[in-house]
Image: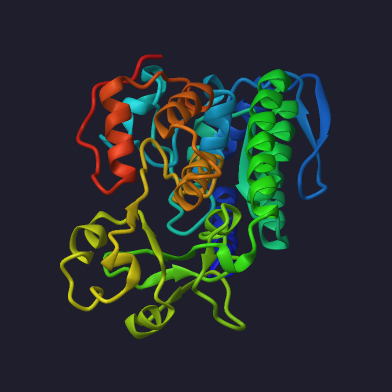
Length: 372
């Protein structure tokens, strides 16, 4: 599924490149841009082992997709040229006011890509950043865009386990090493604590978990997928096992009934709103025992959507949900600390109430802005 999207990206970008070659105005824009950005450069090695010459000073960065925009926001929001998609009303209070209204520039990568290279050039970035897959398809895409625009394009590995390395790599590229190291150490400490707890927890003692995606709850991620990796990383046993299948799949209700998960995680409000009243789901253990949880998604998803560093708070939430005796930390204080450190905001007490309520199944109402 992701590979299909990547191939579609490549075809679309190649079409854009051909269009640029036929567009004198766009070529003139490139020339003006290059003239304004000539100067000293240094060479960095990205996660795909590409040697990329970047300016010694990088003031403006174009994020190729939502995961990259979040990585950039947590590290150096002042370098952002815009968002791939505009923040929704319920997300805005949890984003620093000066960055909420940055322009929506679209996506270069991922399904539903909407940006074109003229938009990129008009944003006048010193760097294009992508955070996610570093497979050959994405390498080719980066090389094509960089060759045509002459804007350095850096690929950073978006695997969850590689989060500390990703933070430090972008920190080095942007010369914000101290902040990058601070965030990376927070992630490493989180991983270490969970690893220590799981090391003494036999597999058969770990909760059986199902991720319900979509309004009917029948889309899920199989074991090892990017969509469920933090459930597994937090010590949950993903009940969606499908030999020979990867990524997202459609499950049947019969399969879920047979699997009988102890816990269901969802971020879809429509599914959550009806699951407890649906007789077809009533016999499943998680529903009978009221252990269906709605993952918060403000300002970014705690579980997914997108798969970026925002998942670290979801990992801490799930670990406490799965093993309350091993992780007795106050979720309220954990959330407050994370939002201050990663999102540059100080949530108000009502906002914390709302986020915690959401994690227990009550989506938040529109909130007043957090304190910066």
